Amino acid sequence: MKKVLFLVSVVIFAILMAASVSASETQPWPGDADVYASDLTFSSNSSGLDFRDGKLYSVDNGEGSLYVMEVTREGSIKFADGFESGVSIGYKTRSYNCVPDAEGVSTDDNGFVYIAAERDNSGSDSLNMVLKVDPLKTPNNDNIIQADRDWDLTSAMPSVGSNKGIEAVEWVSFEDVNGKILDKNTGKVFDSSDYPDSDSNGVVFVGLEKNGHIYGFVLNSDGSSVLLCDIASGFDGIMALDYDEYENVLWAVTDDNFDNMAAKLTFNGTDTPDSVKYLAPDSLDTSDNNEGFAIADHTYTVEGRRPVFRLTDGPTKGALIIGTVFCDYEVHECLAFEWVIVKEPSCANGLKEKRCIECGNVIETEVIASLYGHNNNSQVAYATRINAEGRKELYCKICELVIDIDATNISLVFEDTPHNTWYGDAVGYIYTLGYMGSTSPDRFTFEPATNTSRAMFVTILGRYKNVNIENYTPTESGQVPFRDVENNKWYTPYVYWAQQTGVVMGYPDGNFGVNDNITREQIVSILFRVAKTPYTIDPDSINSFSDAADISGYAEEPFMWAVTNGIVSGTSKTTLSPKKNASRAEIAQLMVNAIDSGMLVK
Image 1 (cartoon, rainbow, N blue to C red):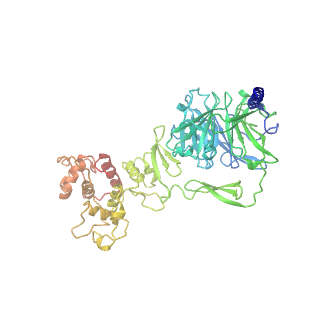
Image 2: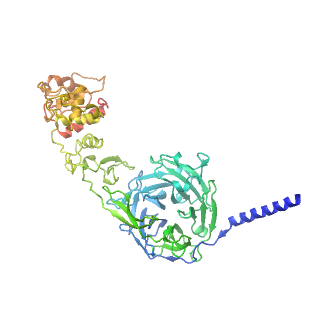
Image 3: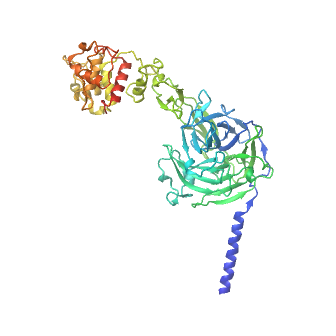
């Protein structure tokens, strides 16, 4: 009996050893031995590749540029319109003039592009960042598309030299990794529900050239990131990653330092995926520095072979190398199709795809022209922000297109408000927050010199105070507080609120003066009634103004308060102009002054 057990043990050991040896052996390339070069011309610094929905994406690590190519199932390849010479990519959080050293590229199923950069080419040490880019954005006048977001991963990975950082990036959907990788944060298999703040519905893997390791991250919408795993690729250096959604494997590919070998990794719920290593195709020149690698999706299978693309860093002509990988997919004949909108058009172009109803194969894409321009007041919203270079820029809040750099203020939005006006920043602030808007439904006009009615000012103030208009909407005509205030008008609930809370009193004749121009002393008095208490008043604050005697009795204390607290400085050094009708520009500035003083609170 012992002898039998011994023999069984020997046999089991031999099987295990054989399996171990088999797993460690390098296999021939699982495709045809022959490769050929495309006749497309690239720059001399070509790097990463990715394939999705009939398009091949590549990046240039010298210029920080993105290229997009259209690939047919018949084998033709051409640059997509607008990408013949590449489009430069700009950081989101760094200087406008910074150039990312774009090494790797990937795409997600919503059409966004992820670019791996190991440094800033305009001058930086190691800076491992991932940039998220919308390739459908219209480049600015400098042919730059600014990233929608970017994430600095430098501190989450080993310290490396500026040319030994992340060379590869690959987005993999949550569906393909849930339960299949070990999450170092929980000690359990990955569960995407643990990461509700993820910016995209997937894990972003990056490959580090220095050690050949693959790091998986969840990238959050606020710019933070979470490191999930650290996977050894089996090589001491890595240049490309590509996830094959048909075979559900992650390819890790090397360059000439490791004879362009590749490993096919299958996630298995542990921190060590199953791995098979492969030699390069026989006819591939393994002395070439091939930095890009991408496999066409399974619907491109012809006679049991799928296209495989490699991109060589160095040459311009013949940099794109095309080979094959064997595939068991049987080509489905697409007969019925539907158009699916991938991205709705707005002030930026949209995109739609013609897909097979049965298999989802995309056979055609079409850009949907933008529905309106940036002069459409009813649709577009603008804002200003300080960019990474410390310069103020004006941008569209919908498509995030940068409209102007060194913008003095957001008044640039309005065609009738010139640069460098005293009220420009105030107009921008009030407009951005929605308290005042354009005076035209289809153009951006502010009419800064136009007088403002009493109804409009009370509405502006009510918007600032976040008045719930449902609580102040009269249900019967008898509830309307003033004789000239009609029910169901845009201003009605705000006037009702102001009357109910003692902000306005109206005229002795029972009217509110809905359409009367509001004067400066009326505005100051209304602001005074909603002021934060306690407050400071200097009785002598208005004595230096020559027209102080023109102030109505009810407005004397409000003017003292306003001058004391810096809300009013006068229409000149010596005049307050209390009876003057207030222009829209003055109202914007007075509102901002009151807010900044701390006297006007929500």
